[in-house]
Length: 114
Ligand code: AMP
Image (cartoon, rainbow, N blue to C red; front, side):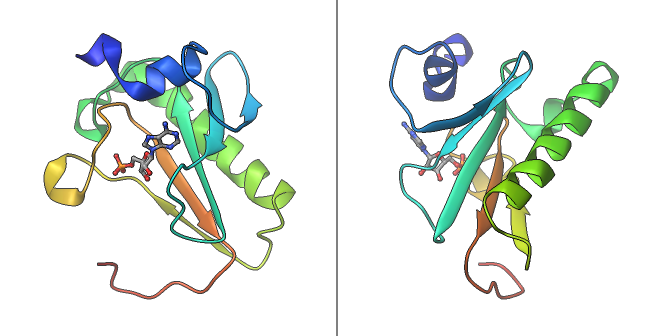
């Protein structure tokens, strides 16, 4: 199942997505069901099922994902602010078992989240 998740298929170009950025470690594409005017997903090429499974070996990769998120936020015109979301496991709303950052922007966000 892990080697067969939908994000891995997007990374491997087996199914299409609106990819806006990619490098050797990660890629970013528009969410198919956007929750804000701008909603981009940033995923590592490495399959990590949930945030709970990250380890020391992923330190640089996780930093890289955040640097990419910050650069994309600037490029996408989110200078006034944006929200990064990472859902971990079903209780938090995770539906795809492949670690991903949601980069959301283009509207105001409330707190606490739903
Ligand atoms: P999460 O609920 O945190 O696991 O987030 C999964 C996200 O992936 C949701 O916001 C979905 O809308 C999005 N999604 C699912 N399938 C696709 C797809 N084929 N292309 C782009 N985004 C997708």
